[in-house]
Length: 215
Length: 215
DNA sequence: GTAATAGTGTCTGTGAGACACTATGGT
DNA sequence: ACCATAGTGTCTCACAGACACTATTAC
Image 1 (spheres, each protein chain N blue to C red):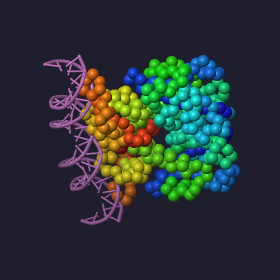
Image 2: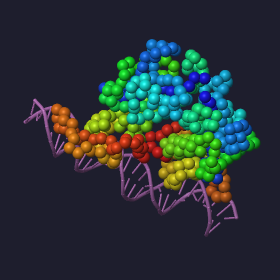
Image 3: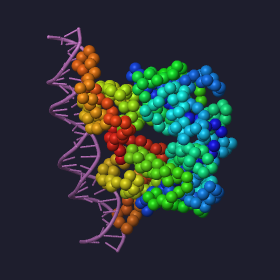
Image 4: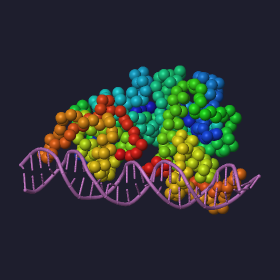
């Protein structure tokens, strides 16, 4: 039996969700692009989540602020080596931090234009994207796709990109005003070529919040 | 490494969610009540879901109309035998069908009054109940807790028990009227001591449906 | 008739959606 | 001055919530 963890690390780039891929160093599928993944090491790993975090850090250099189990894929046909279990996870990070810490070899690809990937990685990514889109309708999940400081327009844009819908500016701001964890940074503004925008940040240690109603 | 599947099989009995437990036939925790579970058999099982379905049928005699992966628990401290992976699932069934097919030894316990269980089974059940409650706010999941034919009052009661809230009769019926898959059974009524109630059924092959708004 | 449950009709307050409006910077 | 983006005010229609009402059985 083969036990692995795999991670779908997503970020927002040029208004599209992108996924982190790596060239596989070993067979099977040596040299092909695939999700970052590794065997579970019972001696070192506390649990699968810990294994995923460690693997991601070691292989990509990236530590994601949000990492959660996605689904466990299993069966005899998904890996040529035999019956396997993959405990998959998904993670989110802003592009800025990603670029800063990513090791050489990290490849970003738009989730809408993926080539055929080894194993069932296309299915895994598809499920991750669905989960993120769905969870974003009733939570603060998209906040993890933004850098520490951001404007409300950027926050709205992020939600719009993830959800694939346009949101009303007025209504969106009324909503965000109720979120206590999105706080104004006093005095800080982002000056563009036009009227500067107030900068905001997520208060303290970004907890994921769920809402009764949708965004 | 130990790989198992475990199933949290839930049913509604006396207006409370109950979980199916079995006395363990083998060590560890031989003789203690625990969730139905078994090792994965790569030679026989297509995947973990298939393993869960087969295990449930063999150990309890029950085939549930709804079975879905819940979460994969893992680590070195949850099983005295060593580092383990448990791919847990949850399932729903109506009490009537359960009683009819359940083998001897099947024990039903209210999820609100559980004793301490082996492994991390209390945590697993807690997560399953949370998942069911949450998913029930925006889906037809509770329909799987009802027999093939039911009245709207029974359907409402089921939602109320699962969600733990009281629902307005008028509003609930307006909602259900929009669900095309809940269909009136022409001529069939359930006579109690008072005005008989129209019987309904789930159309064809009960697909799980999700709603934009809550129930 | 009464009791009890099934099932329907109606009013109201809230809030989502739409959209117009004002504000403030650069050039 | 004008443009572009930031940010606010307001109207309306739909619907959730509340609750009263009618319907149909047993006794």
